[in-house]
Length: 170
Image (cartoon, rainbow, N blue to C red):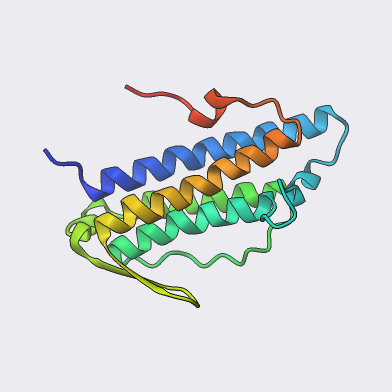
């Protein structure tokens, strides 16, 4: 049986978003153990020209829910990108998970051949659904998840590769 577009997207997004939730929890616990306000992590960044932790979580959310919406035609919830606390970031991830998990797997049928067009100020990119998922949506999503991990690690949170990988299922 061939790999379905649903199987190649939803479980992947769900697993990584749950890992992101755990990473944020570990960041909060670390800050509290150090006597710091956990919400200071929200503005932490790796470099001045990179988005802070909040931006990384927001983009991971947007990348996953946007991919599901583009592949299925099921409208994703709008989110304002105004989170300033770890609790608000956690809620955003939870809301993203709720949307992704609510989409009927049948809505993905035929999406591998659906045309997906992304418009940017300098270019328009056109993909088949399969190419969009595999060469744009998933790499973009994981860039932001791993960068959120890196920001937390940079701030001293005791996390490692196994935390990023999350529970392994066979």
